[in-house]
Length: 328
Image 1: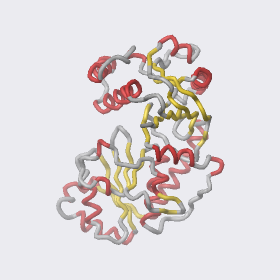
Image 2: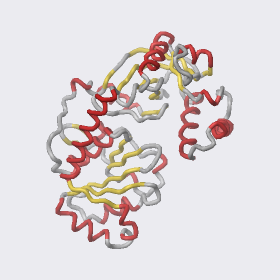
Image 3: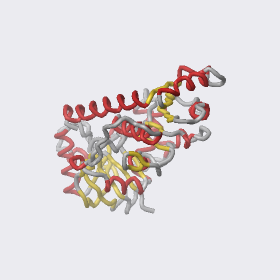
Image 4: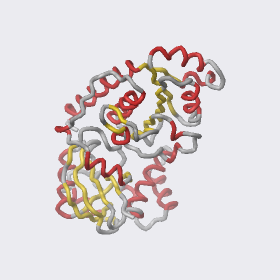
């Protein structure tokens, strides 16, 4: 079965190096990833690969070890001929799209040649790709900042259908008035801040867009699935390194159900938010004072629709200024 891989071919903040590496990839039909300090790991099994990584990075946290070992393992053992590669440039640009035409391999000399010896931080692990489509600059943050990330086919299709930055038709300027409009803003803010975002009901719409079209994830990240009913939490912001952020939008319910869905995720390093009309604050405080929530009341936060909208506008302005200033 064809799989879809988002791969960062180089550090996009180093413009000259990125341009050199990407030009090489286009001309030679390749894409590469780093971890040169590990040497050739193409023939190692998973336990050997993890041991090699730990030897090279003895201070690395457990979750970082797991994340990067999984990425490198996927590159050598899961990326296969016929798969689609989306080369990303930063977090909202597609540098190119192509089809894998070989298996991954290690070539130290080729890695140095690829960056024309401009830096010692070259990428020596390669796979051959037939490039078919060039740069697409998207209107919103769509990529996480990991080196290799598998996405589902429907997410890939949505990337191709996303409006280019200069043609984005959606201009949201009004404070949320409904449950789904509030969720819309929570997801958009999470995207702008670089999180992978999940919504419990992707079929619902707000401001003319289905929530599933703006959320980055179509399912709850595997690391969080042990929590009961986690898929019913309205919005999740996720990055491989915690804390995670869980949001419930409560309009006319009892409030207890929202608090309890969040309570089910108490085992994680997470922050919990209830977003609701201002008149529901008293109801929130009443239920928070009861067991079992009172013991963890510092983990819970209440925000009004108005506060959410103000937060979104600040995030949107910051994101726009950041991109212009840093030329992302």
